[in-house]
Length: 464
Ligand SMILES: Nc1nc2c(ncn2[C@@H]2O[C@H](COP(=O)(O)OP(=O)(O)OP(=O)(O)O)[C@@H](O)[C@H]2O)c(=O)[nH]1
Ligand SMILES: [Mg+2]
Image 1 (tube, helix red, strand yellow):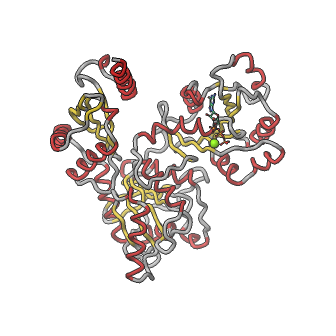
Image 2: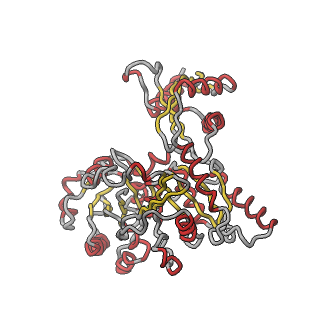
Image 3: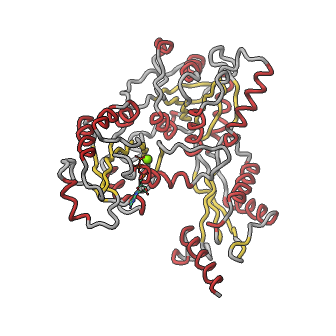
């Protein structure tokens, strides 16, 4: 399970700035697409060696009402689900009365707290550190979130005590395809899960788990193994109907991280809500294989179905890489074939892409449609290899790759997709630059260095 870190503090201390720092690496892997909204409150990140989940709790005013704010449901929930709290302070303000009140409230939660002192870039931190020490929250950690200073070691040190990824979460090999059923409350997740398990003969069931642990339910269907990962909606069979689904974005994200394939459940009779759009953004960021499940398809006229279908596709165009299935979890129609779509998505997500074939497709694509000139030089794309699975990652080597326009990236992505017939999984493209891809490290430029050089060249030319 991903460790969960909650960012807490007065307004304006830099929580959102730190949040962006901690999650940006992930975002950068997925190009912005029309209609895709990103949740700037919950995010998965990986700055150092291991991934984590961050929650920006928003500002706690820290005046008298501030204590109540701490107790406010949203913030309290996030802190309750967190493994660790980063209590952010502003080096320029010193410790304020509000900070003391928040510190008191945080201490009462019993959660591990790291005091993080932000905006230290132009200050002599040593001379003010005593003030922050006096909060009694151990050694405060100085950072400058806006400049990225201290952020890496903050996260590395904070995560040190958590088990290495793979220590706990790795399911036994025969657990098969890991499936996360996600969706906002009341779309019918529990009914669907019940159907899947009920119809497909439950092998093992109802393993104990605390609220923090996710519940893994292995089952077998058509001779294949699967494991459903609970997202709070799954309950003991006898009690399913009584359960009021508790919805937690954190648990949803964690279950997606553990999954190979996501079943994203939508409610045909309610249409797309903001919460659906937010979840869709998370799904895209996660890179998981996907089957979109439109539930409650029963009791709709043909006209209504057409209207709802096109409306949903219009709102979620960036999920068109996935199979869309229209079902009634209640009556069972369409449920029987869902696992075929899961299998197909999983197969696509884990397929082998051979270097010669990838490179040939790249060459064909480039010769049909050249990448543009940048700073008077043509972008060169030389060869490609597979950099990962679930999602498949295609790493393209060339020159000036940091300048490849988003439209051209999409062109390449669509080409790889269609040649390999990748349905049900996103595909990621990463670029690596180097004047000579076979030369030693010294000659290789990172995308950032490349950009910088591009800017310098422009400047030099302008001066001439
Ligand atoms: N000098 C300096 N400014 C910073 C630093 N980190 C953040 N800021 C600035 O502080 C201001 C507030 O940052 P935010 O990240 O929006 O603060 P926040 O805690 O999310 O604020 P609320 O969401 O309103 O509670 C912005 O103008 C940031 O640019 C830093 O390390 N140094
Ligand atoms: Mg903020």
